[in-house]
Image (cartoon, rainbow, N blue to C red; front, side, top):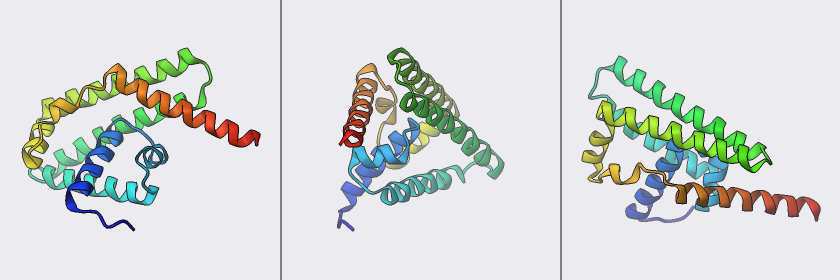
Length: 159
């Protein structure tokens, strides 16, 4: 296990949080961030518990509803990522990426309307509104990473 200081752990958890909200699977997060899947899962669990603690300020039923809604957004994005990974057709792949972006925008909109993003931003002293736009460059980078990953797998299978 690596001996990290609090700042680097915090930054890793922010990256994991952002990638989780995008619906990126743990295996891809692990590969992209160069951390084990178990470390990624611990960060996801930590982030989820932190959000739950913040939501405890709301009524319990409301918090459970919000968590379920956020889980639904994440599941939808994960399905779109699966479609992206399974397809060979570039236009279908781009359609899957567009779905990820559309679901992400909807999720962020709901979180802003519920005041969750502002609450979290106040708690960790970061303006998360600056990090909610997943522009084409981010998608292209992630898409290029996944295509490169698929190409490496294909080359490994050939050898």
